[in-house]
Amino acid sequence: MLAVAHNSPPLYARVRDSLRAEIHAGRYVDGGPMPSEAVLGQRFNVSRITVRQALSDLQSEGLIYKVNGKGSYVDAPKVQQSLQRLEGFGEAMSRLGFESTNRVIRKRTVPVPAAVAPRLALPPGKPVTELVWLRALDGAPFCYEISYLPLDIGALLPAAKLANRDMFAILEQDHGFRLGNAEVSIGAVLANRTHARHLRTRIDQPCLRIERLTRLQSNRPINFDYLTFRGDAFQYRLTIERQYVGLNESTQASTPRVARRAA
Picture (cartoon, rainbow, N blue to C red):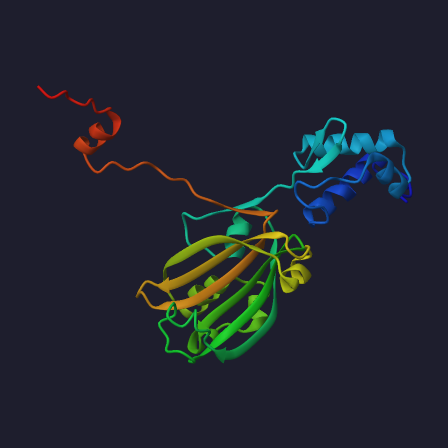
């Protein structure tokens, strides 16, 4: 029940703000239905007119859409990160106006996984640093990440520093490394129990899966990541341009060919 205090915002605004926060926190599945006006009215102890006004505001903000005769559905905004620059997640989110935090779940030394060893140019079974961490945006869990690093690199990344700083920033600013490039592969997976628990989503919810190999300017590979993002909240963005090698190729590409009849 929403209690009314002196000089407090209108009831519809308080309902709207509560629902907005829940949408951003991932309580409602993107594309899924919102509770009905009657259910929301009972939950907040307000009239259906008040609920309708709150939902109308959320629709104007682009957070929900309405289907005649069926109700309101979630259209949660997706955070977008550009693929046209190599940058840390926190760095990218700060530039977009989001507050990101990291929670290191586990840091330990393990034998390099067989699939990761050739990516880091390491022999099978070589000890590496494994970092498992959870990233959040504005307090909402967003990305479950597993990182593998050579031991000399992992030793430079204490968990306490990673709570509020990007790995890239620590390596560059504190230790003078020069990052070169990253290979990024993008796919899709269904959330398993670990993903669902940490990302506050359901098992088998579609997730965005990123594999990223980062190298220094010297071409040494220093980090391989498995990143699992909530699929309803994140997108990568890339602008591509058509390239022409030369005038002849351009002309041939744009001019239809007409078959000649044999004489």
